[in-house]
Image (cartoon, one colour):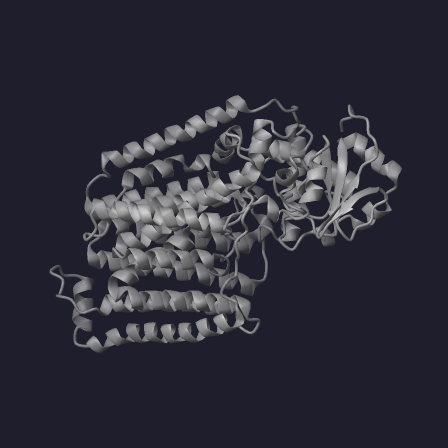
Amino acid sequence: MTTNPNLDPYTNRNAFLITGAVGLIVGTLYGAWHLGMEGAQAVSGTIDYPPWLPYAWYFRNAWTFIHQITVPILWMGLDMAQGSVLLSMLTGLLYVQGLSLTAYGLSGRLIPSLLLALVALHNNAFWYNPDYSMEVFSGFSNGVFGQGVLLYAIGLASIGWGRGAAILIGFLPAIHITNGAWAWSISALTVMLFQLRLGTPLPRRIWFGFVWGMLGMLASFLLFRLSQPTFPVMDPDEIRHYFEAYMTTWEFKSGHRNIGGDPLVTARRVLHSLATVMALAAASWGLYQLRAMRSTALLAALALSGLCASGLFLIYKGMGEQLPLMVSVLMPGRFFNPLMLPALMLFSGLLLARLGSLGAMGLLFSLHAMAILANKSPKLAPEVATIAFAAAALALTVLLLLERRPPPEQGGWLAHLHALCTPYPGYQHLAKGLYLALLAMALINSGLFLYRGALHTQGPRYPAWENVPDIALMRIAGSKPGIIATAGNPRHIAAWTGRAPIIEGTSLNLIPYVPEAGPSMARILTDLYGIDFFNPPGEVFSAGGYGLAPQSGKKLWQERSPNDWQVLANRYQLSFALTPKTWVLKLSRVGIGERFALYRMPPRNETSTP
């Protein structure tokens, strides 16, 4: 059974094929270098990650299906760029198709649903981040795919393909445990609400689909355990010591997990999340009026989970460091992320069904326009976007509640409300007036954006070798066995050189996922960068909050003598040092490019280990 009574299996198939094709194209245009491919390098043995490297612990001891599906890509003979293109295409497929089908299942209007999904994804960086950044077209494969599979399952459920959705939900913890656990909770709420509203159990095929998904998840975990290498046994107390030190210094001081913070910023984020819940509740009520019970259950479950996320977020912000560290590891703020995009598309689908394509698209484009304006203009606070979303939700609620329809047969508060509103049909114009006002603002804002060239906020990052910065230096760095010492915070060095970096300067936050990496991370930070792991100075934190600042260790690196470098080269099997081009080391410089300079390490003892 489909969600929209006007849809049939044939039209669903056509919509599935069309949105899938567009998703693959979008994924190619918005390609990115994927961290999942670097995991494949480590798991397959293409790159040697000695067990004393922090990323050896992460790639070989963190369970995720992403590493299991990327290894065959390398076995097929594809390189890192081609593999990243495939993962980017899969990203586009999950998000474009999932979001389009979500709106299409409610409205039956394919082209408007597809266009709105594309606009939503294009502006995701400015609209859907109440607390934790949600970077759809980025190389952070685990989070991107974990969230994408959940959105895809919602899209399948919206067009009545419940068994496929159940399989994905059952399997999701194998891709991303946190997203999987959250999806299971939303699904449990949906099932309970479905049975409460219809009074019938969920069809067997959906339960069987969920069981098949769980079996796939268990198979993935078994494969991970069987292929997991043997690492040195570590003292649990020592691991806990480094984990607690990392959380209370690097995480809390850098602000990556958003402990505490500005009360005004917190209030804005809470309002943003509540606006999303309000839109979901409005859409739920509209579907109740349409008697589309299955989607009503899904929407109501999302609304309830949004309220739960809001409560967790308030507790998290209010108590901060008083909460157990494991609560901070979960980052309750990111529980909003799986709600934002589906909330908007469910909301959009209901608008398309009620207002027609032109009116609904005008409203949604205006919301996106104001979101961009609020984030681009220093004179306007981000609250503008939140207020617009809340106003749209309120307008939809008013329109649905005051829409003229035959009186309900049953009694109760619904009949009284209908009787109260029927003598005043003019109230319907309140909602329509809000829509027209938002549409007028959209026209003005869109004109300004086009004039300023601010609409294209995120251009293609096609992962091709010709786009790699200073590719000649990267090839030289990969020509000699050994570990690359990386200064500042470059990314994708393993992908570009085929050699392991000693650390990823942008991502020190692997310790919450694999605390066993703490001792080696602390040792490298002290020896190479002169940074005390247990008491890092404030200037070493990057603006993103989870890595090193670009100039971390610059003074030490430039003052270090060739003899000191040789000691480090022997200790850590270093072959080259890659630095920003402005750094000048007391080493033999191989070359200098537009972004980087490459230095050769002194001859070392190949058998040395830390």
